[in-house]
Length: 74
Image 1 (cartoon, helix red, strand yellow):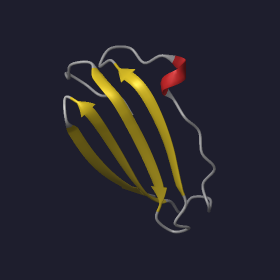
Image 2 (image 1 turned 120 degrees about the horizontal axis):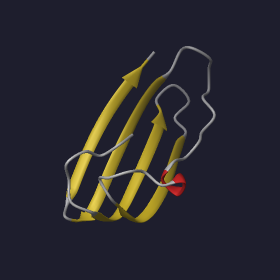
Image 3 (image 1 turned 135 degrees about the vertical axis):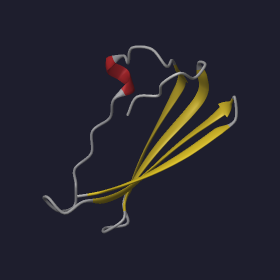
């Protein structure tokens, strides 16, 4: 995920929910710039089933207040 054309986000939380298994993976970042991503701004998760994904990604920032939700299915 890359955030485009936004100011630097402070106190960012990214939550990826596997809608099939109900498991949620959450990562927190002190800040996230809309420019190039650093290696520590990626996270990995193991899907519950191959080629049959159903995920909800929620990105929340405290400063400025922002919440964005993305649903991805394959």
